[in-house]
Image (tube, rainbow, N blue to C red):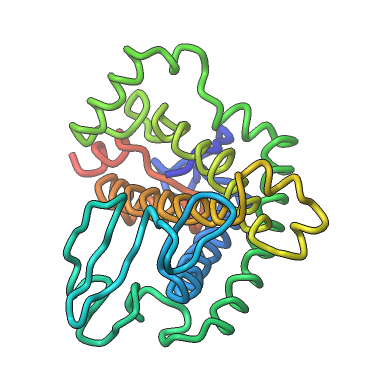
Amino acid sequence: MEADVPPVTLQNTPGLVYRTRLPVRIWHWINALTVFIMLMSGATIFNAHPRLYWGDYGANYDHAWLVIGRRGTEGFLNLGGFEIPTTGIIGYTEHSIRALPPLVTLPGYYSLAEGRQWHFFFAWVLVISFATYAIYSIFSKHLKNDLLPVREEWKPVNLWHDVKQHARLHFSVNGSGIAYNPLQKIAYLGVIVILIPLVVLTGLTMSPALNAAFPVLLDIFGGRQSARSIHFLCASGFCLFIFIHLVMVVLAGPINELRSMVTGWYRPPASRAGATA
């Protein structure tokens, strides 16, 4: 659900407004493809050692805060000492003894070398597309006008009102559905300002060559294993964001939302109601 709105309507299709500009749409689809490929190739890389640690070092006999594994034909997830049976989902499935099954990995079989090739190539795609989008957002004022919450929107009473509106499946602002609502702004800013920079920087921190060139990264993130853990948590954050985003798109009307992200044109809720009255 995007909102980058010049005041124009589609003359031969009454009720449609131009909601999403071309640069935003291009970045949306490039970013969607890139993130999915990086998540799946990252799952392949994770399968090489499905344990996470804090600090500089981590190996099989070191204390791990997260482990995904199996004992015979029983899969499990151990999180901070609390163990959850996961047989048939992760750790052990009918078709896989890897931590994460082939359904969510790229390639669809275990190959650490190929997983790294996919991951590193699309990491550059992510960096270049994000830098281009950031420059566009600043100079076009998309960031200031559409993404940054105004002072009133930060007030707890207004945020709580928006939460209640979402719980009632009312997602639009003033019934228009054109502008971002406060929760959207916070979620998108979280991805743009926190998740993407963190996932890039922690990825760089895991590179031995870059550690030699920029040792300060190890100090910032508390060691290579800590960077790997933060990288994993960022990936989990992307998964959560994607899930919620797709649910919101379906609940808000997938055809109308997809039309906006493909063509830029969107039919506000009031116009849809009038068309069916």
